[in-house]
Amino acid sequence: MSAGADCAYTISGETEAMDLNQWIEFLEPQVEPARGAAMCMSSENFARIKTVIEQACKKLGGACTKEAKENLSRVSTIIDGLQERVRKKKIKPGGINGGL
Image 1: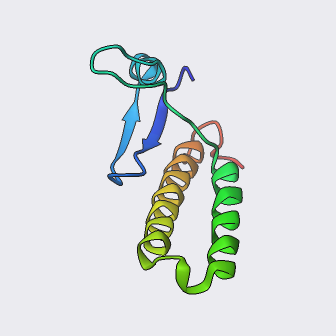
Image 2: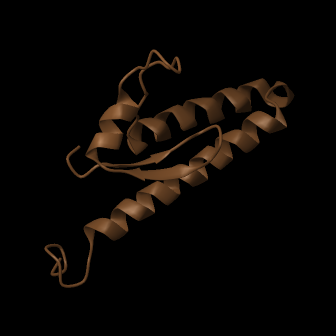
C-alpha cells in the first residue's frame, strides 16, 4: 500500500493512480458525501467472477442481455490495462528488476 494504487472505476471506465494518502482516503467510508468503503479486488478474483458470469450467460442464452455481455467485456479490458500498467512498473530497464 505504501506505493499507492492503480484503480479502475468499473462504472465509468476511468483509471487513476493514487498515492498512499489518496489510497487510504479512497478505502475509508465517508459521511459527506455519503459513500461506503471501497471494494478492492485482485485481478485473479475478478477473473473468477468473470468466468462465473460468462458461464451464467451461456446457460441463460438470450436472457443474458447484450448490455451485460458488453459491460463484462469493457470491465475486463480495463482490468487487463491495469495489469499491463503494473507489469511495466515492475520491469524497468536498469532497475532492480532490470536483470530478470
